[in-house]
Image 1 (cartoon, one colour):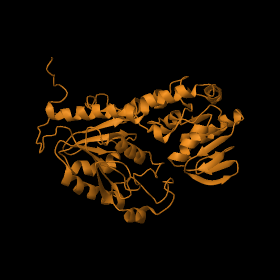
Image 2 (cartoon, rainbow, N blue to C red):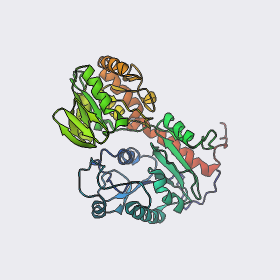
Image 3 (spheres, rainbow, N blue to C red):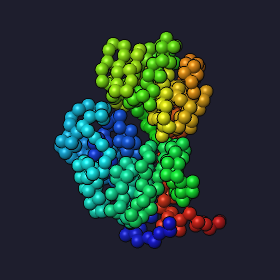
Length: 391
């Protein structure tokens, strides 16, 4: 793992080459794409700090960065995906196959632009796993840092330099390691866990504890559990507001998706950051009864940022993000879901927000990334077994 430096500059801190996605723009309008949101917030968090941030992405960018390199024009993006609602990412036939026209073209252009700008010691920040591996393979002198892993297809067999990952939760890290059968993966020193991060300015504290409705925010698929949220709300005789993409049809008090029918509820469709924060701040509690191993489940933290408790299944990242009885509750059965949702209404909204800010705000997470990048920079100076001089 030890490397020999071929630096062409005296700055010993790596530059960060951040690669975005072809189907979205990093401008806050594509709020339902979690990975685009992470890229935009990452640039907001790290620009102006220790390292130079160079963003490679679509034309209509507003994310702060030291340099924005356009590798997908808006004309090209609209040719591929149309002009439909930015918050409905089910449109346009998008897929994650690297052979698709959008990935092939963007990856190719990105490789050329990075090669014009990179020094050997820089870090290549990817967030689409194997879909972007061709970029990693084409620039082997750079260390790859997958900086927000909430997927399974991490880069494991890169040609050339090393590749490491920052997972969003320990549960997801262990799930991915188990998927690959890695009991001794040999990456422990440089893989890490860094949680998802949020700007408190996007989620102002408006909750005064008198919310009259429960809230579900997410894709309308069975594994996200909106129908379970409806059962809990019905048992408590409380209105349920449902927000998210995937509806096929709706009535005044129900919505139907491909897999499920949700009733009773008020369906408000996909929502951007501002509307989502408004709904979360006004809710009595957010319900996130996800039945699969959730890598992070950002909507729960967003709600807590507003001072609203989150009630979730006791599985996946929620076991790390939802402190039972402090900022929300976790449950196993429907009876527990009803009981704990009722108890959540008694929690202190100020304490909930304080907890979320202390762990998941940009200011709280920035040092975790700086520590990781310092560790990766250390690969050029001897690596894991280097012992500093004791003074």
